[in-house]
Image (cartoon, rainbow, N blue to C red; front, side, top):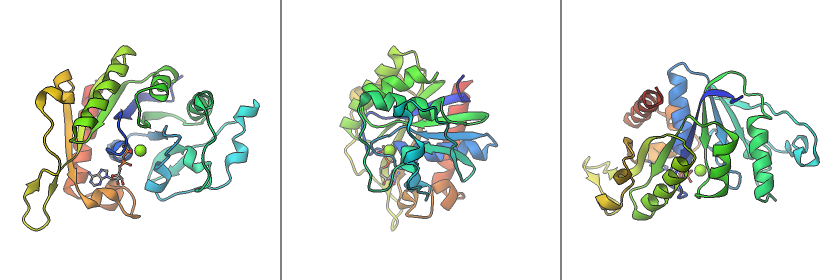
Amino acid sequence: MPPARHSIAVASGKGGVGKSTVALNLALAFRDRGARVGLLDADFYGPDIPLMVNLKRDSMLERWDFWRGGEVRLDPVEQYGLKLMSVGFLLGERQSLPFNAMSLVMALRQFTDGTDWGDLDFLVIDLPPGTADLQEQVTQVLQLSGAVIVVGPQDAAHLDAKRVVELFQLRRVPVLGGVENMSGLVCPHCGETIDVFPRVADDRSLWTLGVRLLATLPIDPAIVGNGRGPLLVSAPESEQAERFRALASEVAAALN
Ligand SMILES: Nc1ncnc2c1ncn2[C@@H]1O[C@H](COP(=O)(O)OP(=O)(O)O)[C@@H](O)[C@H]1O
Ligand SMILES: [Mg+2]
């Protein structure tokens, strides 16, 4: 049984384009619509969600001995009204993960079937960068309702995003649309938008595949959070927060 009515993967192919930022704020925007929401951090090698929600847990690793065959059930961690699961809650901050591809799959199963999520309307899954093993596994372990693709305004980001779209299409996961993040910088002095990166040629962009643009988000220091929590918590009245809520409406509409 899938833990949620709708499981939505946030993917990009490329790293550093804002997957975790979008996944977390999208989850919070669903929460604001009154939904019960979980966020699964599937980035096992770079689990950033605990940092982004101002939480860390040390030494839970001993409970997590599934590779020895023990049946372990985990409870998600709650913060800001979300249910969260991340390997970052189980590792110390300086611990790395001695995992190979096989154990990643087991970890993914532990975080889905082996976790007591309760009844959820939405489970948002923050995928790691890449267009290979784990992305593929997620489509097999979870019955995804759809995927949201995040790109930066760079050629390489669009290139990798197109690969991830292909992967979802092969697995018959509906691609709900895309988000262009870091799309220009609004000058705090004059208010004009500066294109920090050269524009991606239309025929090379993700949008040529027919992926619908659901939201654009500019570069904005407020989005980083800086220890004050995610944008929807630190600045819920801001213009950028409104963009995340509009994104959640678009995603909800695309699901129906
Ligand atoms: N629109 C934005 N404006 C400013 N900083 C951003 C924006 N989106 C993401 N960031 C920052 O960029 C970095 C990478 O974002 P992150 O969400 O971790 O990307 P990914 O999960 O794709 O690796 C983080 O430090 C994040 O706070
Ligand atoms: Mg990330």
